[in-house]
Image (cartoon, rainbow, N blue to C red; front, top):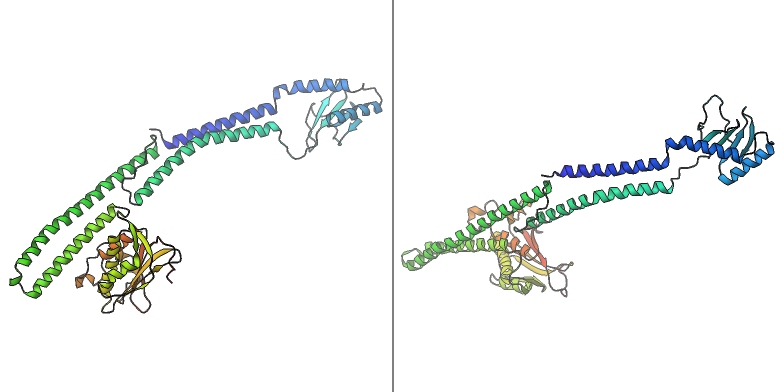
Length: 425
């Protein structure tokens, strides 16, 4: 198996090799030590031919030095064999030290070279050091090194990041509920092994969730058969059963039937991520229909949403039932309208004891009930869980907050499909 760290390591090594070769080429073109002596010999011979004889008048020697200075644009100084200055042009150069071997390069800011001529005179040449200005070849070499690094690193880096991006997309899809999300396996390194592990884990999760859903649906379906037989037996033996006991039995059967229906609905909402039969629905009219069954009025203004009517009806019904169960004898308050950002909002307020702050999220979990609810035998803990599922099924959500004066407000916000209505304030 090709290891990822080996790929990165070998890429870095290749880039370093290319950079080293480039630096070597720079050094080769910058200075050749083997040919330095030949260059100095040629320079001495040329200087002897360009200068007048050593016994020529100083004025003539000065004229020759100035002519060379103008032509070469370098600082020049000509000294006699005894160290006496014969002629000079340009910046002042230090005299040569007779005790040092010649030729030498003087220290200091002048960058001067000493050329002993064949007639015994000494020619000192130099350039005044200014700021370092690299030549074109230096810039070309540096650009070549940068280009080599970029070309060598880009394919590997892009290949790794592209595969990681695809893996990230697959993880996000799985997190959003797409259990069929898989990623393409490329290569044989650690990223490929990670993609393979992700696909295996995602497949296992999908199998477990589907198995759970199937078990839940089958169990719910099978429970309805004995419930039907019990209901039929109850109807056939009504004469021999006390009226009060008969009503209790009917209530228990109705509660079990509702629980099974809610379980099946929750399973369907988990399996289907979007509305199956969407239509334009007046949320105010739908809330008024459900509230009228309990003799409750609805406040607010008309707002249209796009969704599944039966699910939205169940969502409103569950909120009203929850408010009636926990609000005592006071009827709940229902309001519908539009928010300033254009979303539709429906609020149901009860006048009960309220929900503790630490429980306001937990009450939307399946089968979770507040302390004391289980003892009263009211509710199964699926009502509010279905409310949140349906709201999110339509692209919204539900929240619980404390109402002024006591009680709780359950607020649902879902996208609206109409922009003409005024916002609810």
